[in-house]
Amino acid sequence: MRSTRPIPPGTFLEPSELVLGPDGSAYHLALLPDPGGRSGAGGRDPGRIKLISDQFEHVELRTANREFIAHTGTYHGTRITALSTGIGTDNIDIVLNELDALVNVDLVRRTPKETHRSLRIVRLGTCGSLQPDIPVDARIVSTHGLGLDNVLHYYAHAHDADESALLQAFEAHTMWPEALPHPYVAKGDQGLVALLAEGNHAGITATAGGFYGPQGRQVRLGTTVDGLNDRFTSFRHAGLRIANYEMETSALYGLSALLGHRAATVCTVVANRFLKKFSEDHHAAVKRMVGEVLERTTA
Image (cartoon, rainbow, N blue to C red; front, side, top):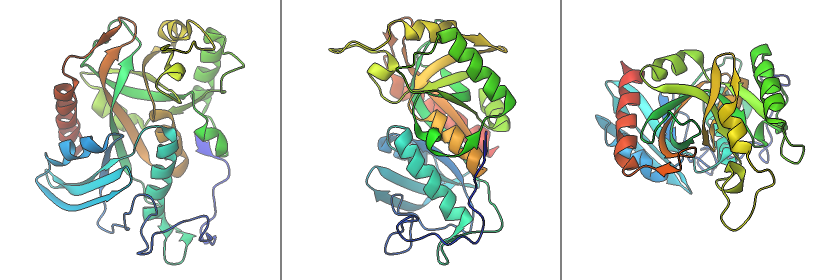
């Protein structure tokens, strides 16, 4: 995926468009530019940030604003910021744009910089497996984000050839209903995905716009289309299958690609939707995932 309408360097960004805090920080994240550089490990759960930073050798900065909590520290000598995003692709839209502005926009002059800096971002999440052979407490690394949300439709972009082929095959296989949002596909960073996928499951991640109906759950309300999850489970294309459901990866992968950043998602399976099972101790499994990701990304 690539941007078809990037904003040129030197363009003045009005105060209503690039909103900053009184101290010049990113408006929602409450972070200031960091000239020292850092990698990022993120999760949607604010409580997960302490779980990550508890494994740091040293924590130098803690900030909190709304649901966005950030801890910056070092692990094996590598500086990392653990940042909570909150739930959903709408929050990813905020987080990615503001993280990018912190490194690629001159916040004093309010203009995009001539030189580009690429961030490395790993999302540490939880998910529901859509395959019978991927059990609870296992880890899934997302090769692609399959967007069932709307965020990327608001950005001028073009799919790569393999993304377009995957999307066309998915729509044909599922007989995608016109009543639902038109899907999109974005690849994760191939190097990061390969690094994190070793010994774990890997596959396409379906990113839903909600937790209940958008993921086929029916509590007191029936869904528009019955049996859609079964079509997801049976989908195959070029050796890939849809491994899981969650709520952030499509926007993370799409916006990272458009903005020139490297992103990957690793999720612990807390529910197997096919087998109707839920983890008995997913907190321990999430902690193991955090440790593994920190080790692999700082080795």
